[in-house]
Length: 296
Image 1 (cartoon, helix red, strand yellow):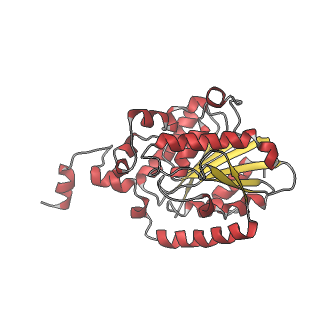
Image 2 (cartoon, rainbow, N blue to C red):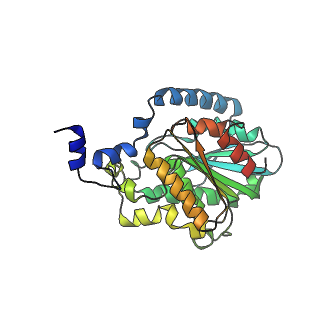
Image 3 (cartoon, one colour):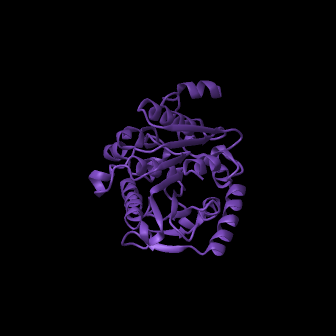
């Protein structure tokens, strides 16, 4: 039997994909042969920036992981860019993206990189992660004076699984769940994230995430745009998996259909792991868009 015949005989799991194709669609390593080189560049930049800037550490929750690194960009009151790191919900820390602080601090803004529980430690419960990052953002807003943060210029961002979590933060019902103004966010940058979890729940990621119907419903940000009250930039790379590209395009289309202010940025020649290099570069597409969103 030919490969084509074998593929035709396999049952479809999502759209036109069989299980093998869907698993590959949510495994970015398949699409980025230079992954190790990109990570090495990022690690070197992050380590140097962390040592040079020596951020202040704050806790927003009871556990050690419920904290964040604060990088001041000004001695006075300034806007803030909060970043939620990626890592398949399983890896990464606030320090792994420390270098991003340079982009925003150089423009006079404060930068925050968040930590939170990882999915294995959470027993596969993705909603625990969502709750922690939302609580962290709420804590930062409530305690803005401690860090000289302007509450009227309060921006969030995230990449990969952090893009997913940032999507959840962006559609939080702040008034109902946190007794805060509904529009605490001034802007959001979502990069290479997952905004509808149904196909993800059918992929190999179900081996470490407990995708219950409640999780899929509550943590699919595309389903809760009613609670989004800020401009959004959605970015993805044209060398990412077709499924990640589709997720970003459909999120953008849903935002426009819902009457939200949205911008879509698709980067030529850029894979999943290279996206942060554009965000880090103030002269590149994502860096410029993030700074422009902040009025910088």
